[in-house]
Length: 186
Image 1 (cartoon, one colour):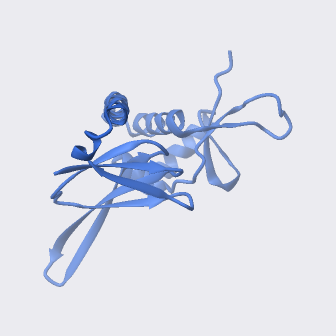
Image 2: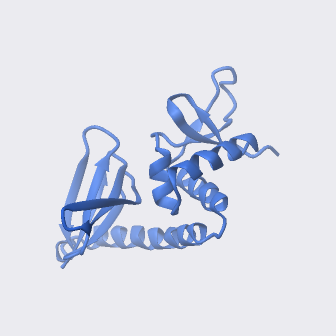
């Protein structure tokens, strides 16, 4: 049975845990970043997954609605909205796959940050220039380890490459360690 979730008023980070036993005495749990789900976005879980899926809320007062596909048959208009949202998500996933399939780690990193900020970013307006948008930022902090997990790299490599991207002026970090992309100057 497949089921459908919809998130309200929050951004959730989902992760997959896979327990692997390297020795008979200790179980090691590896966590892999799977993505983000924003408010009003549906996501699907497959029953009997071999992995343990977890969601982490990045906002208080999180509500997740749980529905089965057969429940959506009772609301055809809502079902159409869910299917349209899944279609859009599928198209975005093709962009994500293209980005994360890049050979160079710096290209995967910059593409990952760009796609995240395109989808979830908020305008950043410097305090000294209140009429000008200087860029867009992720409204929550990400650790370099989380980014590394998402792009198939290490925390150390992400730290080094983030420094390079900052030196090139492609990203900047604002207060509270929020990652920003500057607007393109025309």
